Image (cartoon, rainbow, N blue to C red; front, side):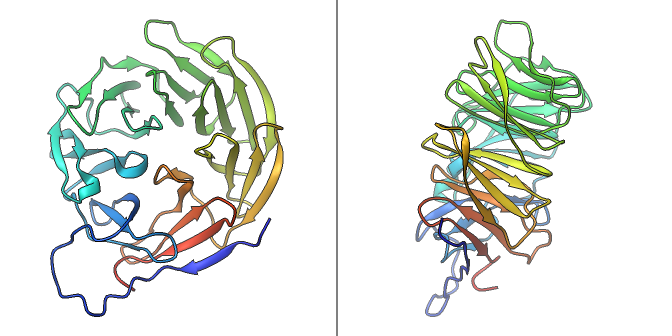
Length: 309
């Protein structure tokens, strides 16, 4: 495993006249900036990227699909689906019948489905086609205290609840997958599912929608995020206590490497279809983002807010 590279991504603004924001290069994804109350693009590739100006503002809450194919945004008492982010010209569609302001959301890998959750009501709700003609499903009572969510391409919802991790499949009763207390992250790929518990246990659950079988894959102190590589071959686990990302080979179910981090991770949120995840968001308006890129030469990238700020 080659050493981690920590590089500062700065895009030179010399020679550029002041003009409205337009897509002039590759996008690495989008983030919701709560301080700026808006969704902002990461313009450029890791190593030469910066956080651009707000493209959808006035938001109380937002969540962006991996790759920016769609977003959900709450403003002025209503939930909206957003498309067109890749053009930096969002198209807003109000979602009728949606729950109020969500407390959390999760996305299917292709961004065609999202699930939102209201803690006060103990309800979850599927949102189909968020970036096109969004439609809200019937609210589903999953109970209060959900600490983690996931949804697959079939609309099956997995929720970490106080009594354990449960599967909610359309037309079927809820089923307990594993008695994990305080699930902090859930990831799915194919017929397998992974759960990080607050106690550090990382569980793999085979055939989670059929005849689930759970076993302990690893233990990581204070895990804060899980991510499966796009090719489905590796699992990444961010650990806050050790400031590291542990990598596991999913074919052999063995440790495959460890990436030390220069910052304390807060999550592993997919930014694109590539192996690119947000590790730490900006804590203040001018603070940088930290982005993890996996692959043959993995690295943690420092992404400034604005051109060279």
